[in-house]
Length: 152
Image (cartoon, rainbow, N blue to C red):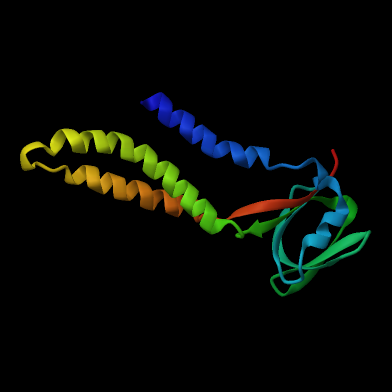
């Protein structure tokens, strides 16, 4: 049973690794961004700045950090990521179903064994509810999507 749970948890992590795209090293991908969108920019000095996108040109990009406007040359930009919340509902449903299903199997077996002659397994029911609720909470965590990554 432990092996099954480990395998299912590993499968939950795989989509995050496979979402990297080879076309991310195109500077024109910044056209996807809208002014006012929250972004995270990693510089070549490995300094990460979080701010609000303003604009970009072929030579640099501009964004707001707090109340100050920052401009970074294209050559110094290593990565640009954007907060991606477009699939939050789908992720909540998937995570709830997967984690809830994982908990449901052993809890259902225990519930079936304990429910003879009027006995019930309150802890089993609580585990099932917690599994589905915890899965939904896990799926609600927003992720970020890399829009641009500099060539190595």
